[in-house]
Image 1 (cartoon, one colour):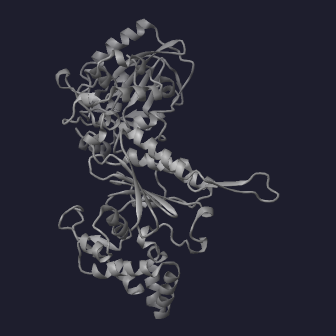
Image 2: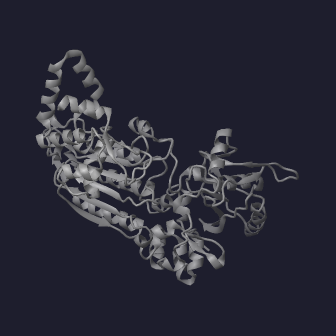
Image 3: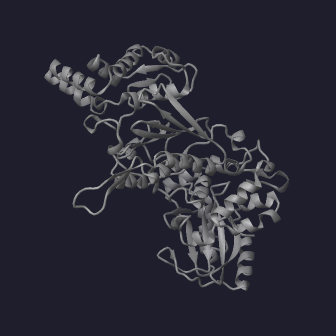
Length: 544
């Protein structure tokens, strides 16, 4: 039965990263069992990998056309593979498929991340052999270091949420037509056979269900993409596009995109593309080509929103928000990145080492060419903005990695704010002052040079920030010098206790270290209050 992937794109590395593919011209059982074990351990939650037999490799890339395998070889390998995988502890059985490719027969062994990791494999196939853990390090199968082994052991039975079974759903919740459309879109041969198969067979083949025949259960990833009503199972799995009239956030319109993840993502992207398709064109004397720019390059919007869908947590009740302001777009998802990526690495553009929260969602998005390969998303956004002549994007999280925010700034030719007063664009919402980015230096200067510096700072802020906005900020910092509940803060601003108002008037102050939680380890506690930080008190003293 065909695999749920386009074989040509797989072999040419267009939908699966090279690190997750291993090519072999022939069958080497001792080496293969270690590779299968490493893919099953899925140390970085990349989604396992593929072992492809009958194709030679050169520096990790396939040499085409393939050498191919004889039918007798394929039959023997499949029988031997069944016995071989019983030597992995606990047992792990990949999905194996003979494929006709460029007039030759090859064997594709698909090894999804296992549900019972960590797995061990024998060092050799002789008697009295020892068993070891194996992981993938870049394009190689290796034994883990002591630290890596401890981390692998700590991952015992920890299955990413998207790959977990959903005990509150049934296979009848799947929409077979949605699955067929997906397979047709990616060019999988499985699509041609789908109506001749039971939903059980299709779900197993796509690895979106697991369990004994009498208790076969859907996986969360299958429901997120292919359920008849995904939001019945995951209410917050939606994209909210909110457009604000101005920076205060009190007037806004909202559009919600729901359905399967790939459908809502495509619909939201179409909406944004249509909204920001206007071009700026300027012809300069003596220059053959005209200067062209758009408000926001589509490739940056696409990658930022795809990243949010790929990396957000689906086991919480927070939606993905796209906030459109007059001069920027914020794309926010919860929670933030996994270690080792943190606030400092984001600030220094260090994105090369990442671990992944969802290993299956990424596979489906890559099959549809909706997201780039591993660790390439943020560089793609940066390059797209640079090529368009736009300001640099900003990527943010907090010390607790509670959220991830991508901010894209409008091209200067479309900006409603003169370039001369676009100060400190890296600071968000109500706290958008140059002073916050340089608060320590400002305080030192005032203490060193006296009152006059403070007056100059206050005058500079007032020259670019509306008085109403300054007063609102100072008022919040003042009342929160003693801890206050969110309802009290929002009431002070004369706005309702709505999540959007909270997100636009309180969260930015937390992000910029002006307010802090009184119960930081339980951010949603009903007893939660907000207190002005030391930095907030300094700012209050300077501007008050």
